[in-house]
Length: 391
Image (cartoon, rainbow, N blue to C red; front, side, top):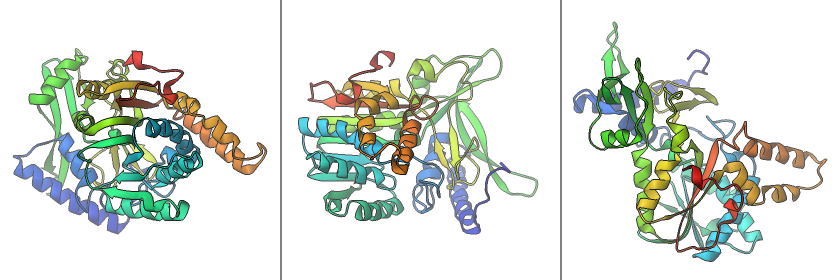
């Protein structure tokens, strides 16, 4: 990983503390933990994990850029679909994992313009550092509307309204499954000592069992004659959707993320899975490098997510590429409001829209999945190009 920029001394020290915590847990568990537990600690260990340790994650100065950081037009177009959901259910909106708060600010301003402000805008955010950034962003960009925002520590017991989750499912801890000629295994994490006695994390496989084995068998993963086939199971994401299904009494839930339907996810050619790490805008494949300093993600199996919601009583109302969804929601009309086409602001905005919608950029890779309960009208964002038949 010599191409990656070096962490600061403070960052290395924080990572070393997290490594000690992880090694201690592995030792206490008998020498092995599932990768899902490692990913949970690496991302969310209190005060040390990637999303709870205080380092800047989003934007040019962080590790990656999400759609709201590219342009306000993303939030403005999304607000058109949110408005339909709010008017058909209740004037309450919850955003899960709000990042820097830019999407919240952009949607609130656009909903105000549309005359459809929610009575309350809840942000479900576990990171104290990100809560502080969200507060500052809202105070700077939408000061008159910031008072409508409240931060939540857990899912509500009951909810009516609209739920939005942009790039949330991909950072939920995943199990790694390995298919070989001799059977199905779960790939986990152990540690070993090098010649100098330094403890290092390493991969270790155990026969798959329990829920992991049952889920892997249901997938009918490719079985290579030689070597192995590795992929992911997002059991936590499925459980999270089911938890929302228990609480959503009436309304709309929009999930936006990168991923595939199952028929494309578990292709024989994708033998190494989809797991990726991000550090200072560099993608790499070593989740053990500097624990707590890298984002760790996996693509979303949208068939599994849709099935989890349907089995829990939600209606799967739409599934489309991000490009088609944004076009249906009027992103080009939002662009035209940016002023004369020859102006610098319009040109910058047009480039951002291209990145959001071009097939070779985010347009095809990112998808939008909609669940509803108690809403019968067709959804604006899926009026054309709905791909429900592919799930």
